[in-house]
Image (cartoon, rainbow, N blue to C red):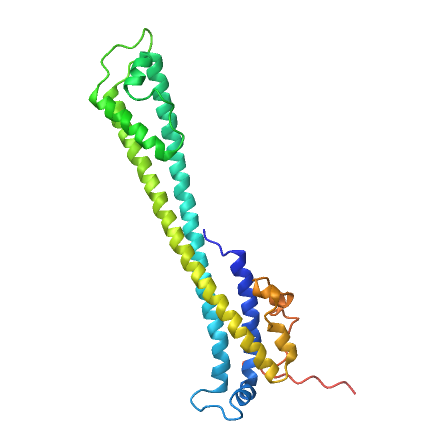
Length: 270
């Protein structure tokens, strides 16, 4: 299961507030903005509405790129945790079996046999160390099969079967280690991609938001300019109150959008 980080969610709300202001307040005043930008003579090949709407579309696209990269990283990290958990579970099981084998050989045959099979040292407690340790044990058992009888009343061990079992355990553990390494590398690539998308998204946000603020001031809408202004909090990705409430039903836009018809106030009763 993948989730979006709080950093991305907060930044998304900040940008959505700007886009909402663009859609509901800048686009309806696009002709006035264009006249201010082009000194009363905007170019014919681009309508003023298209010019203003492009700002919102660009902000949303960059933010969507960041969101997708953020979710991809979260998914990769979740998969890495799953693989690491499986590796650790396999390591724990294999470690206990090697320790049980070492203790059993010591009890049935004594210290000389344990040393002969390279098990005099304690069993390693990390996956990467356990593999060469177990491989060495298996190799020695294959080269020097156990032929002596166990101590009285102690069980006998089949060194050939034990060596084969250790080989299987070692391959399984190596596969788990390789999978963790692969997932970790994928995490690094996904994180680099997310960081690049985040940097581009935020650079675009800061540049275009400053433009939006200036356009609102150009048409004497300082109230809307203040609404989207790049404050110190927003600059570091912390939403202002309006970023969290701009689309509430109580917070109606100051001007109707093109898609929202104007509603005349009802006449006072006589």
